[in-house]
Image (cartoon, rainbow, N blue to C red; front, side):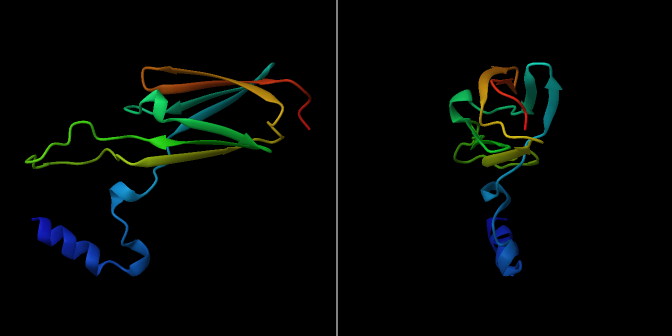
Length: 123
């Protein structure tokens, strides 16, 4: 079985040889504008909060990290694999600069909850 999977990846075009587990995945996110700024909720089930990095530059919020497979053990034969365990990246474009926002974060039940409070005007 392992040989057939390796053969599959060798036969793929050069630009697609990356294994699915090595690709960055893009989590789903909800973004809402509120009176004080913005409210962002990102679906990060199974991600340790310590693995999450958040940066803001200009009008882009950049969220990165890694979801790790904590169940993998030597000798396990997987029957079905649908969950991506690898690094993730989410870029959210805002209609104005978010450099002058205060970012508060919380992590509950697999959801990263961010509140971006405006300190200045949205320009």
